[in-house]
Length: 116
Image (cartoon, rainbow, N blue to C red; front, side):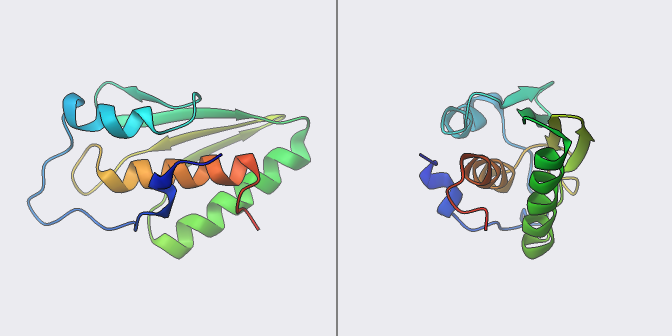
């Protein structure tokens, strides 16, 4: 089951916004799947596992479609049976609520609750 966070809008950070603090992002992180972690109070990272390269590639393509539709693009690392994801808001140099919304949507796609 996906997080309700996945239903929230992806909105850019307001001009002059600061990245979320660890206290602020802890609530969002708790709503994500267990693959996600915050690294250096700067970005989200996850590794999704698949049975083969084709499934990993298909997931990567779905994430690409999501990113293009929302105008918010993660760094993706495709390898056999794995897709690594790094997500942060480049314009504020750290984490924003929209990063967690995107992560929740990636979880939803991975879980098969809305990837098509």
